[in-house]
Image (cartoon, rainbow, N blue to C red):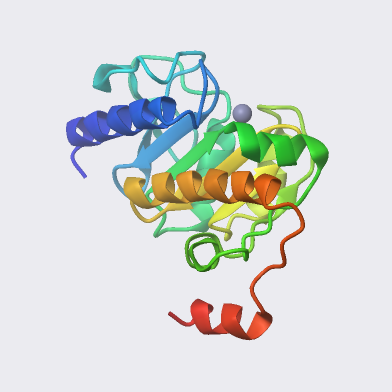
Length: 201
Ligand SMILES: [Zn+2]
């Protein structure tokens, strides 16, 4: 993927995440792979609604910064997910309100309440709490790197996708499912036989 094109696309999605209330102020970080070994990532400490293409930081999977700017301090788990999944093009981490409500309560998300949840998200693990930016957090994320989406206790959510749009759609769906779960109380999940059928689609 052309780097300039990727920078524009990532800035667009950051704005969309911000406008959809999926992230607030400087929270979260988003990345987009441009080739096998390089990706761009949002800069550290900036409002996601105000980022332009020129603000994104180019890095490689060894963690070396290849452009101007200071990358997000969570670059480590983006790298871990990219390394574990050669087909993954994008990683999105943010703190959507309803996901974070579940994450602070330590309540696992029920992604099987609706067919969309099953299709877009699959099983969503909750990883334990570790200090943001720490190696322990990177290791915990790496252990679940094959999952389409995960919650991080007392912190927020991560999704990945084969395209930027897929990673965005999964984050939007994850937040919808979290909100649904909070509003629908103790509704049962779809029966196992139906989940199995959906998984094959
Ligand atoms: Zn965070």
